[in-house]
Length: 128
Image (cartoon, rainbow, N blue to C red; front, side, top):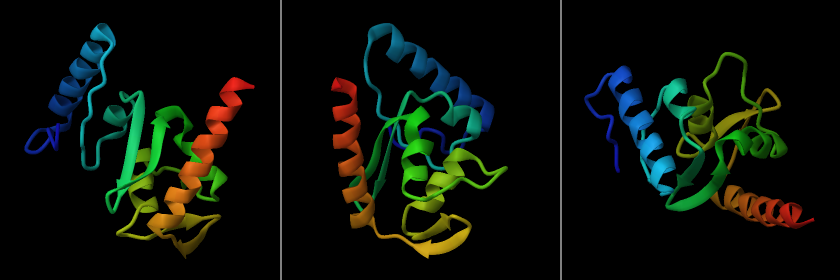
């Protein structure tokens, strides 16, 4: 589903996403949804997230691990900034973000390689 929240207020968006989450859990299915700037409450409804830039996956996994992943790359979410807003700043085309309080440039291929390495290590840790 692409941009299902266009023209909707945040309460209606929350209700739709909550309903879809409930449905996915009941029938044990995956639902892929594209949202631009979801509210923190809506973002918290997702079990997994996939972040893409320039057609490439730069993160895919549990929502609860996204901070661990980007923190491992040196990116920390400033206080009082929503997770979704922070993640949007990490990804190009903005291409700069907070890294230990300094503005730095980041390129998609580097993020993709980092994710690939993280994903391999994460899977290995599950089997140990």
